[in-house]
Image 1 (tube, one colour):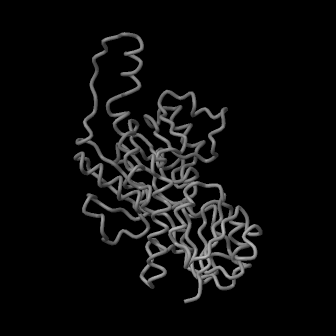
Image 2 (tube, helix red, strand yellow):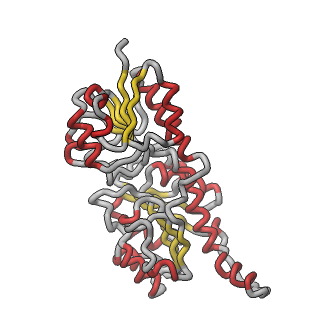
Image 3 (cartoon, helix red, strand yellow):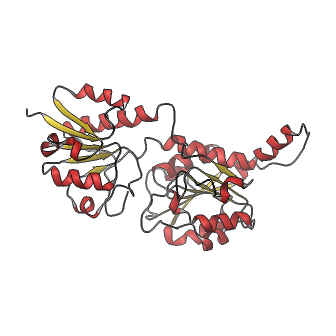
Length: 322
């Protein structure tokens, strides 16, 4: 059998790349930060593993690798990867959807509990040595709304339902599918303004596409309950950040728990830093102690499927963007 050439866009010094040695000697591996640094092996590459690098580097690999058969992207988000050339290419693309979803689902539950039990007030009272008795919310009496019911959304729904919450979900196609057993009602995207007023918590878990950019804007915040919480574990620009800040300032909504932002790192001058009703996570909700290894293990399992002619997981609809 001819040797398979695998090229990897990434830093060759990454310790986790040692795991790729389990593929040798049957697989020829070339790792580099740029398409140019992958020469000359890139010309005979059959597989591209996109660990790091922008869409321009991927576009260059496409141009240099006429025999490319499959591209795998480490992350679930593809907005920084998809180019017109990649979208038009017949080469299938898979991503890391599902690898990090469980931890992101946990962050949403953390955000819900943070506000339901008023953790900021508890911490303030402790700092003041103050015995401050107050009422708290019970999650089992509240509603979780999920904007973007994909793999992350399903991880959120499973956890919210386990806590006895009423769960509503919004997605492009509301037709029944696996995972709906943890959802009380599924709404089509066009019905977002019917769903939002029902929710005590709204978790944005949608991919970033032209259709979802700014999906949560002024009209959407106006549709939410005054004591509702917005949470984002998808992509920052899915939320219109100035509109959210204004909704938080004016008490149009109660608070926010955010792991992703329109600009990252979040600029020091952002008003979100000083808002008492905002919980900020620096895009670390999916950075578990094993997230790097998990991403690599998923690729290795995918590679085994590809080499054996089996169906790949997470094949992306490149035109849809996820």
